[in-house]
Amino acid sequence: MLFPAYKLTAAIAILATSLLAVIYPLKVRAKPGHHTLLERADAFASGIFLGAALFHMLPDAITAFNHHLAHTAYPVAEAFCAAGFLILLFLERLSECCPDDHPNHSLPLMLAGILVIHALIEGAALGVSTSAATLSILFLAIVAHKGSESFALAVILNRSRLSLLTIVGIAGLFACMTPLGIGIGAILTENLAWKNGALLTAGFNAFAAGTFLYMSTLHHINHHHQRHNTENLSELWFLVAGLGVMAGLAFF
Image 1 (spheres, rainbow, N blue to C red):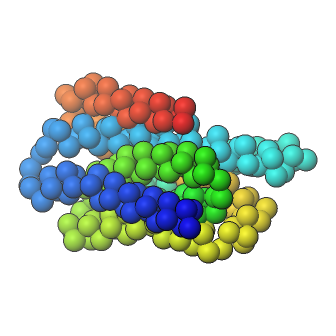
Image 2: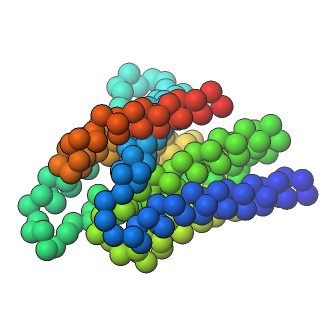
């Protein structure tokens, strides 16, 4: 009974961490006006996404493809990453053609969808684990990333014109996905251990890394250059700080 109890405890702790991380961005979202601290938090969130792509998702995808497709010399993971980057670039260019009175929510909603699926996959990885050491390592890694990603997601959603209720709903859905993945993984361990499942996860991670790279570079620069030029330098240091957090987490 040790593993089921441990996994249940991990699911509750991850859920609580996710919900706590979005309180401040949602609290500020309810107040109109420009918030310098939130803009810096936005830059910090961009650093988190950049670090998650470079230190976590893309390297994991490359390792998985190299292991399962050792006979293939083509950089498959990098191709998926480029596809994710280009799709978001296309969506943002498309949104610029829309009138201002019909705001386009495709970018934040697509990013939210990607994070939701990624959170489910992370939970499943913990759910299929049968070693106490592996469980502990995965839990520490997930709970650290989950808090950062929950905060970053809430900040990114604040950029959009989505209603506060919609943002709360998306944040709540994201918070629930890892615990749900833990439950699914614990029940369907054998199915999720298939080679095809590993390749699917690797492809998704590489694709998500491309979207994260776009959101933390071109989209971030476009958003901040248009609005607050005088604050760009200070926000750069917050982006570097977010990147540094994810670089530090890579040791674990």
